[in-house]
Image 1: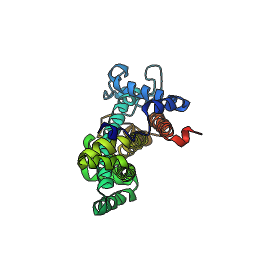
Image 2 (image 1 turned 120 degrees about the vertical axis):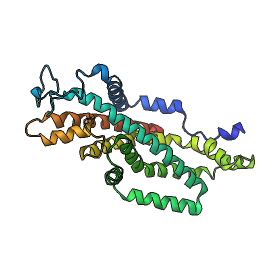
Image 3 (image 1 turned 30 degrees about the vertical axis):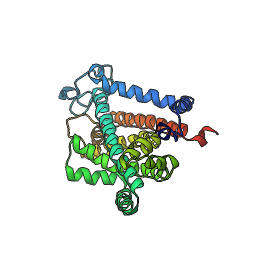
Length: 289
C-alpha cells in the first residue's frame, strides 16, 4: 500500500526549492514580502503615533521631521496609519485566499473525481462566476452583505473560489485514471481516501503556487472595495480607505494618496515576483531552459 501512495510524486520539494533560490527576482519578492509582513506584525512598536488619534491643529501637514509621511485631514499620522493598514490588507488577503483555496480545491477535486452530471453542474455554476470581473463580483457581494471586515473577507473569498476549483479539477481528471489510483481501488480504498491520500497530495503544489498570485489579486480587490466604501468601515486604517481620502484632497495633500498607493504597488509586486518564481520552479519545462 505504501508503494501505491508514493508512486506519482512528480516534483520533489528539494528540487523546487533549489530552482526557486536560483531565481534572483524570487529573492527580491521574498525580501520585500518578509519586510511588509514584519512591519504588519510589529505595527504597535513601529508606528510612531496612534493611527486613530486625531489632532485638527496639525491637519494636512506635509511630510516633515515630526510626521515623516505627513498627516491627513483629521490630523492623524499617515505613516502610522500606513503601517497599521498593512495589517488589515494582509490579514484580509491571507484569510480570503485560505478560505477560497480550501473551498475551491475541495469543489474542484470532487468535480474532477466524480465527473458526469455533477461535474457539469458544478463547472457551469463556476463558469457563471468567472463570467463576472473579479472586482464587479466582489462589489456586488460586498454591497449585499454590507461593509465590515468579515463581509469583506467573504466577498473576496467568493470571487477566488472558481479559479481554485478549475486549477484543482484539471489534474484530478488526469490523476483519477492513473495506475496508482486504480491500484488503490483494487486494495479497497474508498473515494474519500483516494482523493485525500493519493490525488490531493499530487496536485496541491499547483494550487499553492498559484495562491501567491491570487493573493496579490485579493489585496488589490480589498483596496478597491475599501476605496469605494465597501471595505472595513472607518476610522480603521486601510490602504484603500487612505487612497479614497487622498483623492478627496489630491490638490491640497498629494501624500495622502501617493504613499498608500506605493504600499499596494510594492506588496503586489512582491507577491507577483514570488508567484512567478514558484510557477517557473514548479514547471520542468521552464527549469530546462
